[in-house]
Amino acid sequence: MAWASGVARRQGLAAGTTSSSSFTVRASAVGYASSTSTDEKEARAEVWTPLWNRPACYNELQALLREGRADLGHRQASNGIEFAEAVSSLGIDRGISGFVRYSLLKRRGDSFVALPSGRFPVQARSEADLVRNLEPLLGQVDRFLSRFKKNEPPARFASRRREIDEAIYQLVLTVYARAVIAAVGRIERLFAERDRTKDPKLHAPLSGLDPRWLLAADDGSLKVRIAAALASIGPTDKVGSLRANLTAIDPEKPWSWSHGQGQTAWTGHSLTRRLANVLHRRMMDAERLQCRANPTWGGIALRAEDVAAFIEGGLDESLIEALLFGFTLIRRDGQETCQNVKAELRTRWARPVIRRVVPRSWALLKHLFLSTPVTTTGGQDILIRPEPAIIPLLCANRVSNACEIASRRLFSAGLVPTRARIPDGENGTRIAAALLVPIRRLSDLSKLVLHREEDHR
Image 1 (spheres, rainbow, N blue to C red):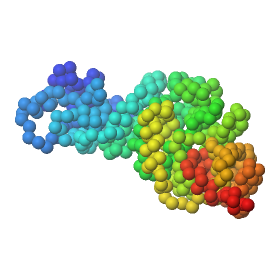
Image 2 (image 1 turned 90 degrees about the vertical axis):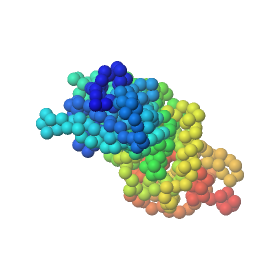
Image 3 (image 1 turned 90 degrees about the horizontal axis):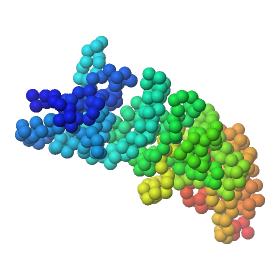
Image 4 (image 1 turned 180 degrees about the horizontal axis):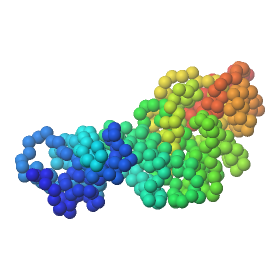
């Protein structure tokens, strides 16, 4: 009787819900195994039934059910995803310990059943605040999708959009942010591959993720580290950030599209080949545009052992690629939050994930692809430029030839590389890709492949 439906305005329920019953919102087809793309269209609603573990009098119960709402900032939750966000950020503060979620779905022909869709505890989660940071970006995506005829976007876009909702739901339920960034990255890649001359159009590139997503997504894995470091590669003079190589944004005005394909170079049959092509394109553009330094500077740098583990292989490269596209949407505007996040990551990632032997070939070649000068023991700074032939040689697995060229270039620059013949191998493309990753503690790398001046004398 207390749960009797009432007037939506009196109960303070969100506009547009399918029912004026307490704790009832529009259905979101996420969070249960049998979810399908048609559930949101055909489902009547979903009901979040409250649980509490302390005594309550009948008047309190009536007041709770009469209000029957969950606040999300300054507005009310209108669907299942928003209700989950509100619960996680303590939008419900009436002594409720949790909710059991029921979805009113069409099953067995035209019959509707109340499907239990899980139990959701009420507790504060800082990651839930980050979800609201996604709203402008997802609003931009949804407006784009709504412009398709009959409001039916291509299946690949609809699937990726639902994947984001599923990842958000799991985030506020289990504090698992990496999947959200990967899902956002996959839909960003669809936009990168789409012909921008076709209607409907995305009027501006996606952007604006909070830098704290980097901390939330950090699960201690090497995949996150590699993707974050690559995505942090910024512009150098007129060569744009790494994102300009992934999608056709203007290198000098990344908030707008470029004319034509710009500096895009994301081609190849594998992640490592695509990264190698990006490095090759960036070095060619740097020479053509007369950049003052190699365009490989990144705001997030890794230990050489982490890069060695990437060269060794065995990682989920499709996930790295999705995270890379997702991380490129993070704001890098030099604000205090961004600087604090970088400082925290530098502390977290001071040690490698797993100890690995650093390949001498990569250590030698990396000295030609640094964004900063190499400092000799005598205090002299030497900026080294690579030979254009090195990356094609590596992609052809002619590692020995590439290292011979690198040794001659280092020697002509005034450095003394160690004399050790490096054999050819089958990981030349992986070495080329790894040359793009920003690294820290260059002095440790130099000790592997360069003689000290006093030793040479």
